[in-house]
Length: 154
Image 1: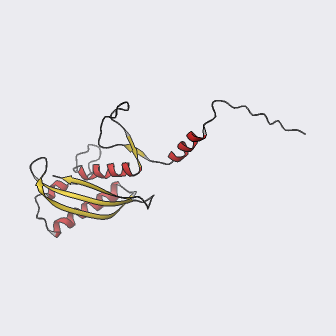
Image 2: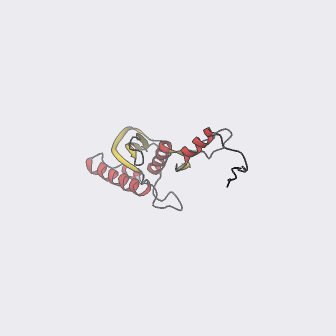
Image 3: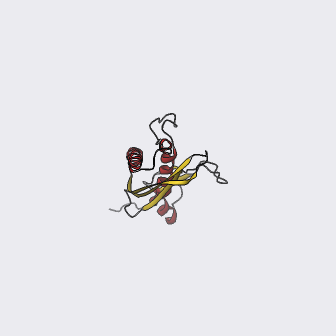
């Protein structure tokens, strides 16, 4: 008894390099690159993933005021309300509480390792006082991926 070993192939057989590239991207999360900038040939809406995506999302979360997003009124943190508060431990604990609570709600794949808050001796774009927020974070899926995220509020 003999078996027929003829196989019909439709389409094009994938090149091994392309197969490896596609396999490496399976399971990756992509999102909108922030801030929106024009990329010649790709337009304004570019994609980001990994560290770049997490960093962009955290910056957007920290710089968005509560109620600023129409369909997500709880998204963001009202950090500007702390600008004219006394630069004491009570204020910094309140800021820390707001930041950690909001990150745990909207950035579930991120662990905050360190949070530093500095009052700046300069004025923000609106002529008011400013704060500097510095986060050291770790992506939970990749424990070797630790990085800093910083924003200026003012």
